[in-house]
Image (cartoon, rainbow, N blue to C red; front, top):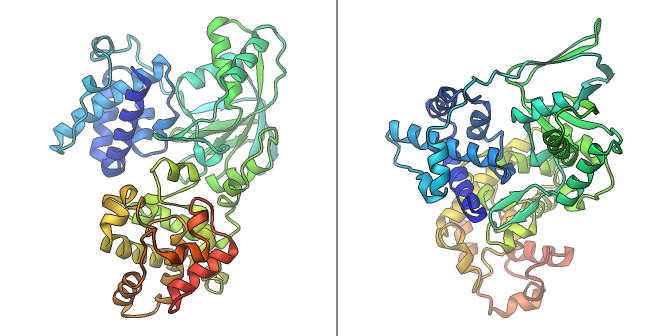
Length: 447
């Protein structure tokens, strides 16, 4: 399978999952297909519920085979439910791969690896334990594909035209692998977080120091992805390798796990922008969460974490821009926590109407429009948030919003944009001076 074809297929699958992944009958049929092949269906179920990001799949044969079987099973489930969406594996996989895997079935049924019981574990603090795991045990858990790489609890990823990718250093992995094979590697802790999402369950028996990770639990790797990958490769070369990993287990939500990650390994500094937008002590970031949790929000669809998405025409603005605008325009409202959800829902309603009214500019053809107009420039969203605040309690807000938008000449040739400093800084985040001019433009008669 060519890398480009893999990327294109993942893009298509993620779009389908966004649309139908919540349908339980589809999920049951896909999981049943995996079980009929004597394969564990947990990974497929996680992919459909978006707990597993398909962008974390590698180009290994095991992952490519999973992608093939998942696509095949999903296509059959869609066809059976008479949903007019299709995935033809022949469009993405080679003829040889189709021949090898269409009727693929494991001879021996894969057993569920959960629950996982780890003995001789020490409780360090509330929701944090430490233990020892042999490389063989770690390899067995890793091979079962139940350790999920979660972009929300890892360092900033690489942004490509196809979406987020794991920020991986193959040379570093190979170096660790060789050190392990040559008995030179020190065992520094791998950190696994059992995601505290209301579904995962962990039990610790203080009498015999046993930690149990129960069925249905989601395990994210917080720190040590390169080491775990190197460990798997070393084990392939020497199945009898003698090596023990220190493993730290946590039971944290995504937000708490990210906070924990911030105080960890400083070898690879994290962008300040990335850290700030994950800081949930800030009320404005909680509003962003409310917006992002709305699967139908038009703003959520075009708001991403990093400028690279905008450069690659995969987004129009950034979470950090919307967050900053909310902080500066809704200052008083944010002081009361009960307003958080209210503000988020209102911004979704306001921006849905704005972007739906000007659908060509924001939804249908935004990346062509931006060549001649600033209407969907990332910094223009500062003005839209300011306008949303001004019209928040006005019963005629739809009419007034349209009047304001129609009164502004967004064409790039408008001298106004040069005068206020946007034209020469259109790719940079707006300075405080520019933000104030945009706020004034959208909430008063003009700059």
